Length: 295
Image 1: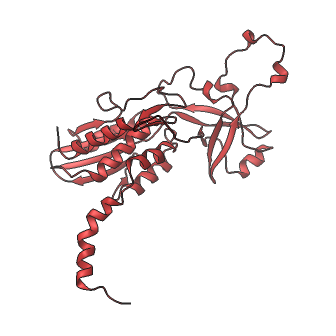
Image 2: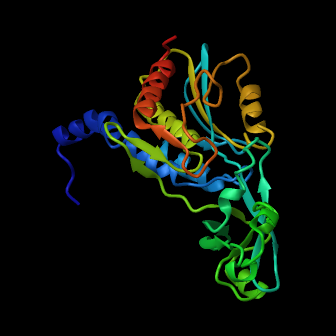
Image 3: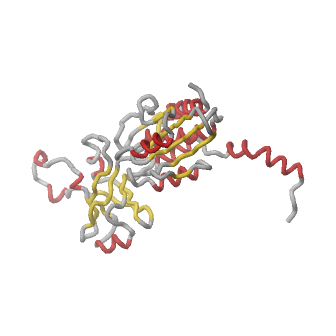
């Protein structure tokens, strides 16, 4: 194997840090990637694995958070963004191969949150990977002629998910079991003019996390210790963030779930929750400055 000339080695060393930064994913691609992911509260492993891969040096702590640390000593700055979302798990499997659902997460989501599921595509995360499904609707044939005013609105107890199985044994063969996570099928929709808009379920929280990833990768480290934390179970007991607070007592905290840092959103808690990419870019710039020590 031919060895590199000294000047070639020097060029590689000089390029190492700038080139690594140049290869970091763009804010736009991060927003689309994280926006299309699902992380039912308490079941954030896939999201956590993705964030670890995006941020060299990041690690999982004992609470299931993803933590990225730079520097040491005082002052300590902690920027935190929640990974999870209110979603569903498989509650039971019928002998005919249908799945029933139970909601997971205690954050108030409004009376229409479950009704948005009726007739919609969902993703079931089984042991063998994600699988497509669809939530059934009332039979138009069986309800024909009945007064519509007598029909109660769709409720979660009415949700039966069809994954193409004909029996409970078929469901098991697909790797689906009770407590398997279930979310709406996600795809980030881009629309609008200028910097444009991005829409998907839980888009604001995902875009905020994308802004934090991008800011952390490009920010110049400030004095002291800089901590970036992607926290687990905000929508359950918020104990992931509590663990971060205990780990760095007295730290200055930028919690992207607080009003002071929250990303503006339209149609919140709906399947078309929408953020403006100009707002995402502004948040990224603000976070980069804050992580660098600006007040």
